[in-house]
Amino acid sequence: MPVKKLNKLTQAANTYKTILHAMEEWVVIVDHQTKIFFINRPYARFLGVKAEDLIGKKVTDVIENTRMHITVQTGKPERLSFQKILGSNMIANRFPIIEQGEVIGAVGTVMFHDTHEWKQINSHIKALLVEQDFKHQTRLAAEKLDTGANFHLTDIIGDSPIMKALSAKVTQVASGDVTVLVRGESGTGKELYAHAIHQLSDRAEYPFIKVNCAAIPENLLESELFGYEEGAFTGAKKGGKAGKFQLANGGTLFLDEIGDLPLLMQAKLLRVLQDREVESVGGTRPTPINIRLITATHRPLESLLESGEFREDLYYRINVVAIDLPPLRERRDDIAKLADFFLQKLSHRTGRRAPKLTAHALTAMLAYHWPGNIRELENVMEAAFYTSKDRKIGLSLLPSHFSQVAEKLSPNQTPLSLEQASSSSLKEQLSLAERNIIKAVLIECNNNRTKAAKQLGISKSTLYEKLDKHGLT
Ligand SMILES: Nc1ncnc2c1ncn2[C@@H]1O[C@H](COP(=O)(O)OP(=O)(O)OP(=O)(O)O)[C@@H](O)[C@H]1O
Image 1: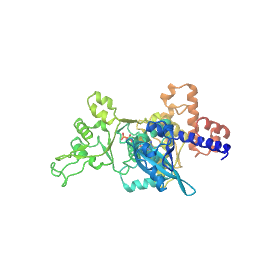
Image 2 (image 1 turned 30 degrees about the vertical axis):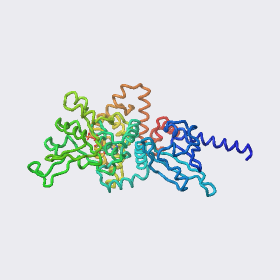
Image 3 (image 1 turned 30 degrees about the horizontal axis):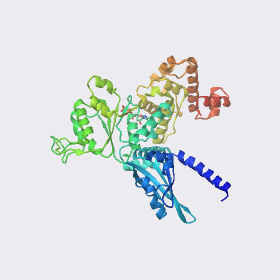
Image 4 (image 1 turned 60 degrees about the vertical axis):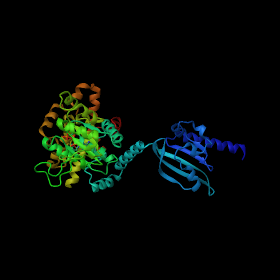
């Protein structure tokens, strides 16, 4: 082969090598004698040696449980096979390199470097699938399974930065079995998040069982949680009854309002979590259980610790990862979208076309402080939906306190919250006001930009400039 050609080939090979070294996947190439021809640096780093030092060595002497020599022997590819290397479970692919009908070597890749990474990627893929059109099919399948979990991450509406960050955190923690504590005011969506975590976890096909600790009388809590045996007490059912722990076995147990759990039950719960076994009321033998625990509270547990109403040891057990849901007034950017979502939902349910909020109504809604959070917003939209006549929801269809909020706003005033108004500069207030007014008018005009520009008294190109400036495109 002429020297020039050889140089070119070496150059090309070197280019590929640079790329292969940069890949996150681990790559190894062996020749027909199963000697290492190439191994990329990330793989060699994991093995604790320099890539260059492995060249020419028998692959079986270097990589534990390898089957690369078998691929060279059989010429058959092996996909997604488990391989334990240095105590970690990897997922590997092996392909023969065939030239003119002859096996001249094999290339192997390791895609997932341990089971944790594999599970995490699994959760990410699940989230992506649901986001795509598969959403519908996935839901149908879940309904068929009837696990008790009805909401996915994509059912959680909100694109404010804080909501995006929360979605990322949920996707990250969902895959493991880590105990999650969801905190937030009443109506902020704590239960929704518990469902979403379960749906993204490896337990998605197993039960999701919810218990509202505040809703069950203290004397019934123990048997509700842990079940009872036949004859355990007067009135006990024949054959006994399984508790929520037993029903959730293999899946997720969601303890809502954990801050309301009586102290005695807190001690029992702690024991179950530590021993991973449950003893039903009147039972003689504990049975092992395998659950993932998610708890939620609207009460600040730290102050319950101080007052002695909540056990410190239990607090640390349940608060491994905390998900803090912001009140609606701290993410006003989501109000219009949520309102529209609830109106569309009602429209699907009733077959009636969804009415639109007028700019005036929306302005008042943006300024209101929403003590009942999203639940309150949902209720306000429901009442307005049923009372709307000309497919419009004006201020008069909202509860009277919205008119009071609107009265406080001068004609040109912004739909800013009062706390925001006092803490930001005039420039910021004006910019936010402009953004909110444009948003409200767009909603009113059904997103018809020509109409919106006309209503705002500006040209279409100015409107486009402003949409761009406020990130509303
Ligand atoms: N981000 C969201 N997107 C859409 N709907 C939501 C969202 N958050 C909450 N909701 C809806 O608001 C209502 C209240 O939510 P949820 O019951 O999850 O709140 P919570 O914080 O658990 O309330 P509580 O503390 O009173 O039990 C539900 O109907 C839920 O579907």
